[in-house]
Length: 116
Image 1 (cartoon, helix red, strand yellow):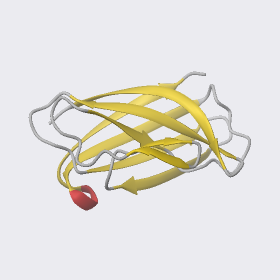
Image 2 (cartoon, rainbow, N blue to C red):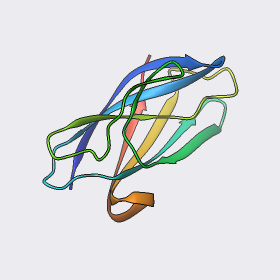
Image 3 (spheres, helix red, strand yellow):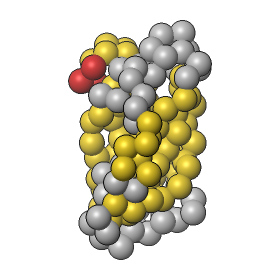
């Protein structure tokens, strides 16, 4: 199992910014869960969450349901909302995708620096 990740954009839901990442399954097995942690290195704060789908959100609205993330497919991983004025050019995201639900099975982790 392996994936590529790219930062797409910042979006807003209920007044809080969140980060949206695109994940592409370039391995041969489906992914069924994800974990994301985004750290604001300037403020020394972070947000994290576990997900059992790779859904696309536009603002607060679910735009596309993606589960599981099959081989060759593209999905989305979103951070929880930042409850502070986030430093958008000093973020590091750690994203882990797993082959089973609830972060079980084989997991692959990547880190990415976020630039505006």
